[in-house]
Length: 196
Image 1 (cartoon, rainbow, N blue to C red):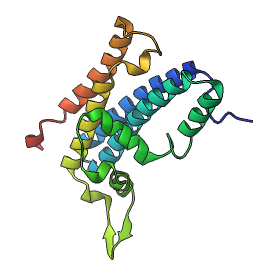
Image 2: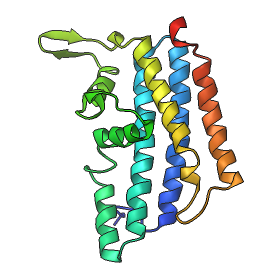
Image 3: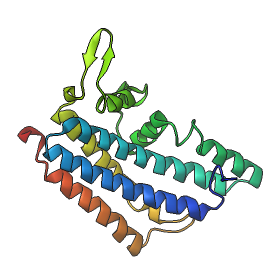
Image 4: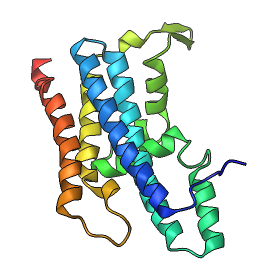
């Protein structure tokens, strides 16, 4: 029978490192799509990157608490973490990423409207008597979301590469900064806000 949640903290650390890597790749792809003027898809990928970073912070926080807890409590925390109320809930992941931006971005991140907008970026739909199309998501919305994702990467720094009770070190900082520089450079190549 497959496990519902990781057994070891080292597995959580590997998961965090892969989340950081994947968020980076999603942001790079979002920048490529932005340059190709595919703004809705660029936006959606930037939201996915934002969610991956939120998931990383959620796992780091709850995983550390679980690691420090007695076995029964640890299992209970990890079971919650890997449930629909934890890392499988898009709005929860968005809220955790929001905490890392250092700013409050309206109700969009609290009430699920960012998640709905992400879905709208992919699908044609019908709401409140109107046809909705992805093309209503423009360059400014996509750019701002990519920028938020890069900001969360910067604030995350080398967290996914440093284990519990370890200090940041030159190797962990170098690895994190390599990802962050790549994403920051891709964002910079999109141009300034007033040039769009």
